[in-house]
Image 1 (cartoon, rainbow, N blue to C red):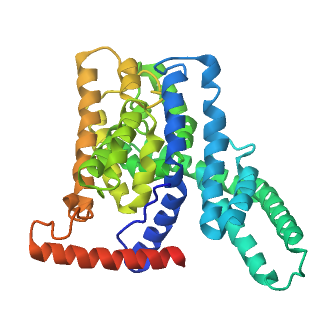
Image 2 (tube, one colour; image 1 turned 60 degrees about the vertical axis):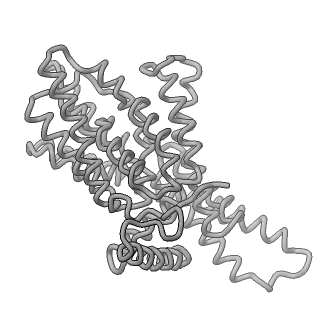
Length: 385
């Protein structure tokens, strides 16, 4: 049975809206985390800079990231809205935006899957009890096919270009910050963009080309480390490992290995989507790392791909100063991200108790129980709405 998770904190106004959206996004990603791990392992092992480079097996990477994973997300999103019929229509609609896209359409899949499923749900509500006996299967199949096909065409012609434009805007924002010498502030855009699965667009579409120009002139570039730094993600995962909900902690060690050693940053994105406030930890860690990189004047000789510690070791230029600056920044960013993430997680106080009565203080226990009950009830209500 797939392990899904509903974010605990909720509230009113903007916070509740962000929590609700993040919860639904996490609900589409978390059931497919095994597929993400499979893709991460294949990528870390078989790409040219991987542990066991293999040209033939590396051909699995692009189809999985561009087609399989978005389709699974669209399928799951549709299923959450309208069961199996919604899942099928959601997957068909998602095809329209992934075909011909330059970047993986994860965000687009999170839109198209539920949207197509909602339309078929509306249709089913309109024709309910109005279809003559014997024609139910005919109506069901053709309605799903027509709506799914129409949404695939609409996605390809409308939603896909909108998502590409959104990616371009994110890249333009990073370029502006780079041009105005406020590099630490790039984390305010880069870290949220990464969690929305725009990391490849930001890194390879903007930072990579700019970094190549800088490296050609100076032999290294700090731009290669703005998005690829594994420190912030490492800190977020460690915060979950020590202070996150207990039933999620067993999943963190494998994700940490995939992220830090395999360089597959997408593996930690669902953990932020589960609790959107955790993006603050990633931002704080990212800003810390970039500030140290800039202060010490370090950089890498090329883009670390994937963004693993091994790729960093391979791309760090010679010189003690370079090594000290790069890895001081990397591990400092992890430490800050861990500290902020731990605080945002309440240092484990908000995790579910293993047994009734297990708490450090009776008053704190009662408060936590009441808060947890209220949050769970509100989250269920939000998910059902």
